[in-house]
Length: 281
Ligand SMILES: C[S@@+](CC[C@H](N)C(=O)[O-])C[C@H]1O[C@@H](n2cnc3c(N)ncnc32)[C@H](O)[C@@H]1O
Ligand SMILES: [Zn+2]
Image (cartoon, rainbow, N blue to C red; front, side, top):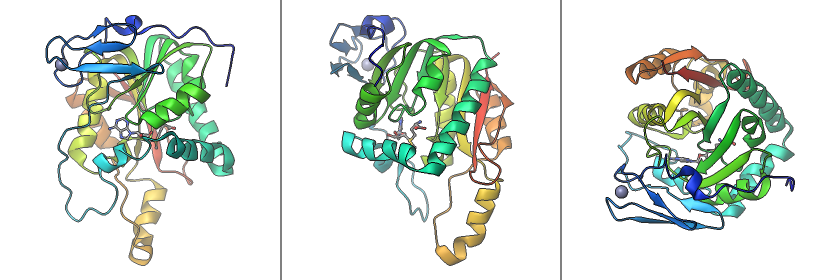
């Protein structure tokens, strides 16, 4: 943990840009909670984390679906012990350390291609694996995840010299007004959403709150990794990955007013993930 960190700004710093995750109305913020005057819901802040996650949407059904659902995956890291297990793997395992280095490199490249952000939202932030790489490109980094355990882990282990604010939030109902932040970074969530309509809903929601850009990872249907997985499937019976093609991402972005400006692969062999940079006009 870096002890040389700035004072965490108060919730008031976000009052102008937050919105109720249930009704979309503006929120009123005090030092320790937010309140929606429209639908009368209250959102507490505890230990520096404002709880704005809304997770009550019914999930579309998936025929013959075998893996975690969107709803069950949202529960996976609610406790800090589960979050710690996820995050320490990225430190312990050599291939995961390599992957993080390459992801940091890609993020730096894509973020450096854009003007510096006043407010950058990382959603989901997980345990803050990428916080330091993002922080250098923003004046205020908002770290949010649906799982309280992950946000607690990030708050305790991923403090940066840039100001940070910590929230719980669902990426499918982001508690920000339209175009409220300069950019949104969404790493390794899309491929956990089993239903194609929800992957589109995610992209639309990220683009709604971003004023200028979204960086989003997806698992490339045409990657070598996915091809090998499909070939091995009759033997190992591993469930198919939730993939998208670059053309899908381009089309979805266009439907929501953005263009796909870059789409580098994390690795040609070892990973099927791509980092898409979506730009708004
Ligand atoms: C594979 S982790 C990636 C975390 C981080 N982006 C990283 O790359 O280290 C996926 C994260 O998505 C979070 N998550 C799951 N469903 C979510 C949702 N609907 N909205 C926001 N976060 C979600 C999980 O809690 C988990 O922390
Ligand atoms: Zn409301």
